[in-house]
Image 1 (cartoon, helix red, strand yellow):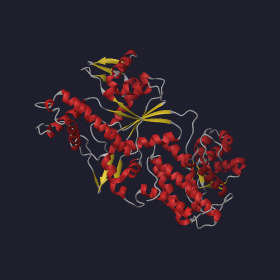
Image 2: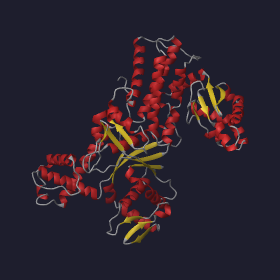
Image 3: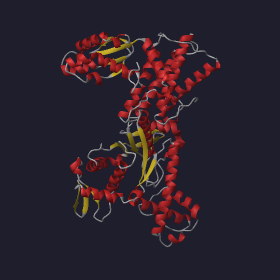
Image 4: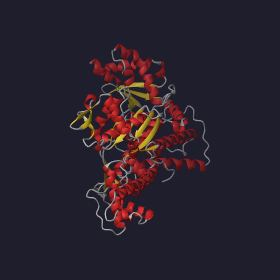
Length: 567
């Protein structure tokens, strides 16, 4: 079946053969393109074959004819095609679905081919990999990472792994928001806590950062410098003190963020400083460029960008009336920097929080103004995550210091459960993370259920080695049980799942897939003895177990979850 070197998997090749068999007929019907775009999926019911397509129903909606009549003509064309004659038999079911019953030997050979590919089964190679720069998490360095950041980290890193697995060259970047009023407030808050640590009666700024973390930073800094800066905070905090605590506090926060993310199996290729962007003068330069292009104008004492000319609902301020640039100006400068680097990225992906929804159209408008011939940046908006503990939702506030931190999350449920649960729903849906469920050691916990299937296979492999099992050639083996057929078909759809996860930006397809595959394996395990079967059957089933092991391990790895050998 491996006739497509670019994407060599059974389902895509079978899809291509079916499309080729009916191409002429579909062209005669005036439905060209359907031979490439029809759906091929597992049959919905046992006994209805292995694969099914709704091709006739789609054609009928265009032709306004009875789909069963069209299905009969499509099946006739398929039966006449030599490429399909030895692969399957066909039947028409329901209102016009076409079901394919694959010969057992075809499934056995497809499984063997997938096993030969090893850890690269489902991967893809490209003559020219697309260079992609992904930016995600990008938290303000004013406190600890919380579960919201953890969701974006798990999602972004999983998407990076998936895009790389299908052949792209992907880099990840953390944009450090270390410039502006929030950083001044952060420096003043840590300075106040430092003063309190020295026994001075100093109040936090009215809108300062509360909670224990600023106090922890102040104590850590006091351990480094002692009372050396007492003169800068008594009788009043000086600008020098605020600058010092802002810088040193930021350094400590970033060090700890990197350590926590590393433990979370999320690694960035680059950490880009917004403050460095301002030191280079980039925001001012990009504003001048926009003025030269005639895209900026003055109104009410401020400088505005004509974003309405590029699809935005209103124009946006670049420079305030007091001469200070807005965050929008630095966002534009940052994107210009990314597109101007020597790496020559083909595509930019930004993963932003739900509170950034209003920034999407303005940033895209600015990029259209500056780079009219480039693809616009892809901006993915993630939604919130709620932590459920003992049936109650925990309140989240970074400023008040009441959020659930990434550190607490990992201490509570571990890296694997956190990674799995945080990508187990679509990024554009609010996620309720049930801590109690994530701790369960039973099939009610999906990550445990999937990992247990992987560990169960290792126990079979160990037992085979202990019993000195000698595999025999199973060429021509075709005595497949229904559980074996279902398990093989589940595996053969893995490349399609990976491609769909990449195209749709949906890592949750892989968590759902791994659950389904684990379920198919557990059913197989309880109904199909492996080592106790006759030698040819045992040899095939042991190889099938190895293929399931490889596929589960890869599915989990693509979302940053480990595949243990024992539970």
